[in-house]
Length: 305
Ligand code: ADP
Image: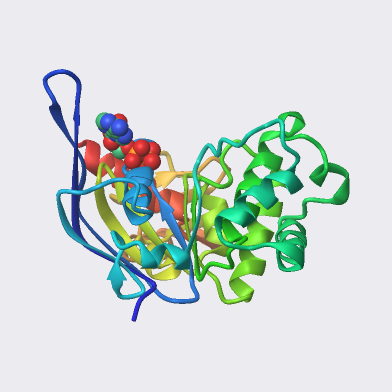
């Protein structure tokens, strides 16, 4: 059984006096295995927050199946399994992080020594050190607030942690701390589903990704199976008489002298044959593997065309 199973999910917003329809999600399907770190990626406005709000029961939807650990995400009981931190957490900023944790701890039924231990555990996991855990939240940077958002989301020891853009607006150190917190929680058995438009972060810690563009999931699966589906680019460096223009379709001049870019393995083979036939000596061939960003850029361009 998957931790999250979404099938053919559709969502339309109705806004304004005339209740104009705006389709935000079209037939979204994805599955998140138990124990995984799942990155939900896509450009702004693609439908990430809408999907997350439906998963957390904050929004209704038109049609589809949305399940967490085999039960409908609309149910109340399932909430016990889930911890959630929104993109812009809003907390009472006259409280210190520790006071805030006590407040949220009471909401999930913790008290006394157990609550104190849980707070220490959660604050340590997000590297909230003693200096600032006892300061008022109004003095916090965005990165500190984001980490406190994660700390409150894990107080109930959820099996599934859902984070909306946990790394957006953070500096590199803040992003590293959030990445480490996600990895540590995952090592404790927590499944993490998070959205992000920072693809290098997603690439470095996720097992699987779902890519959403304009309300539709365009790719889903293990990262390497997604990037492998996009062909690698080959950089061929040659020496000899200077070529004035590309001799073959799919080949273009690189920035360095003697560098030619071939857009697929087949084009590279053709180009190499051309070089041999024309006495051009081949110095080296570099393979540029595509990144998630390359695949997403291609998918965005396809959606816009
Ligand atoms: P993302 O999180 O990927 O940036 P969202 O889920 O916030 O995307 O938005 C998806 C689409 O739905 C966008 O076109 C956005 O303008 C629209 N949308 C989001 N929230 C609302 C709302 N409350 N009312 C109307 N349209 C909305």
